[in-house]
Length: 96
Image (cartoon, rainbow, N blue to C red; front, top):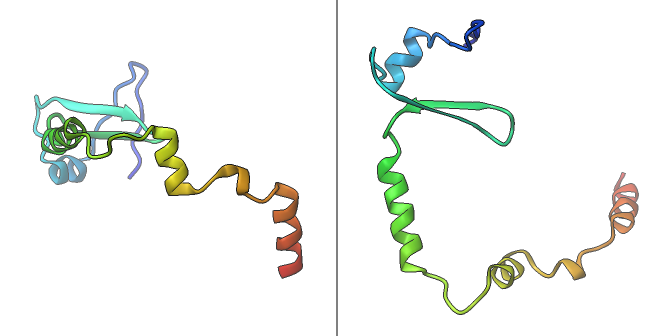
């Protein structure tokens, strides 16, 4: 659903969107940009419960005695063992 940004930077949320999100006149909304260049608009406080659960998990520190780098290496493997970009290109050419 497309809408237009005014000269003042304002956007009118279509009624279907407002209804689906439960947004009423006078409600506060959270607006944030995504890494992909999109925009997320949601009713303020809608994700408070989710954030609270995430912070609770973080406080419990479920992973101890290991650095972030060591943890990521365990999950993703050692980058030093990855094939070179040229080796990947050669393998892809052989498939084709």
